[in-house]
Image (cartoon, rainbow, N blue to C red; front, side, top):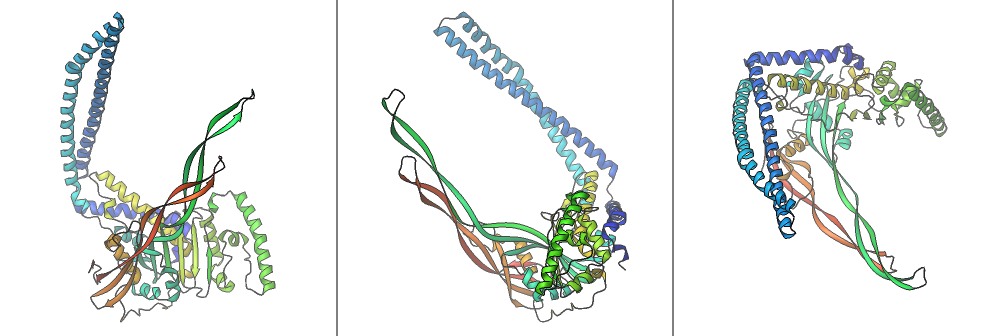
Amino acid sequence: MYEHLLEPPKFYETIGKEQHAANIREHFDTLLKASGVNEEENRATVKKYKHELALLDGVKKRISRYKLFRVLLIIAAVLGGIFAIVGIIEPNLIYIAIGVLAIPLSIILIVKKINPLIKDAEALRQKHEAAAAELLATAEAQMAPLNALFRDDDTFRLIEKTVPDIKFSERFTPRLKTFLKKDVARQYLDNGEASVTSAVSGEFSENPFVFLHRLVHRLGLETYHGTLVIHWTESYTDSEGRRRTRTRTQTLHASVTKPKPFYHEETFLCYANQAAPDLSFSRAATDTEELTEKQIERRVKKGKKKLEKKAREALEGGSGFREMSNAEFDVLFGATDRDHEVQFRLLFTPLAQKNTIALLKGEVGYGDDFSFIKRKELNVIKSEHAQGFAMYPSARNYYSYDIDAARANFESFNNNYFKSVFFDFAPLLSIPAYLEEPTGFLLDDNKGSENFSSLEHEKKANELGARNFAHGMSKTSVILKTRCVDSTEGYDDVEVSAYSYATANRVDFISVLGGDGRIHAVPVHWIEYIPLENAKIMRMANDGTANVL
């Protein structure tokens, strides 16, 4: 069933990329036909609209030039007046002549020439603006039937058509909910310092996955700086032996370091699979694709020596680490913290090693831009290319008054989305063991518990808006955490706790020795962040809607 995915880089380059592009074009054409939009009529309207915009732009530039010339003439008149006054005060016929000529000439040009030109151009501008607005309204009306047919989940359905083994789901599947209750998932995902703002879930090989987008809080330190300028008088002897005094100036500097909350967003893929269930390891991106073959050879040669040393030390210490026979894979992948050598080798077969090396070297895709964390049945892929990417697609990405722009937007977004998602999956797809049929370790045991998982509760609370739950004095980003307090067949009642900070301006005076030999108090202004917590109840119905009680 999954033979076509056994070599994911090759599949994407030879089949997947073009097949997906063809599916996108076909789907757009189907929607276009169903909408009844006349392409040529819309193109003609858009062409006229853009022509009007070009004419409008030309008129606006002309008006700007006229107004600039008017300003210059006003300046000339003012200067003429100054020349005339100076010529009268200090008799100078040339100055008087300049003033006599400049003032009336400037006024005449403004009144008789420039102002009429501006008036005519303004009228022309209004004419073009009205024509452009009418043409835009016509184009939007022409495109309205097509825009109405775009759906947010078009992106998911297209990926499923290209790669039928991947199935997306509007709600977390029973298998995913079951997995999220397992200790290994809770320990990694139930982060009290992070809040899920968006999620896209589904199943591959009947094993659940979820793309999570989280807002993460971290308490760090911020250094604030302050200055104080001091002055003093000192005596000195000059080169002739005379005593003199002089004023000295010095800027004193001081700093204080205070706690400060920091926030960042992250996106990553979680995939549950029973293959190698006792194995844990981690590896981080090292941008291997940026290296030349010679640089890779040097890295592998140097890394191989380190692995051999680590293996010797492990043998002497009685631990289980053993280097792989494929040094290139072992060094470039870098999962040296693995804790089960047998299962690591069962997972990374020669084919898996070959696929992974192709990914790391960037032969296809984004290269070595991903971290890979395995904690028993939990697999986490966090790639650089997925950061800042809108995981949940919106049909608004395609809306346009222009049929050609709509097509371009639809194709560009969905091709880019597919590439991003595929190469987040690629490190997992590169492992044949992950393509096998599930062994049924995730059965639905959701009966009698809440209708939604805590991650779904967090996602919905954030969709309602963090400010709906935050303390009234909050001045920072807000981390929302949830706890189900009651559940029926129809809804979950969830306590949403909002964590944020109030701020207060403070000043510390730091003692600094000045060049005058005295201690000075240098003011350093800083911000105190005061922790806040607020809680409200959110009711989340079975249809996915929610409101704050």
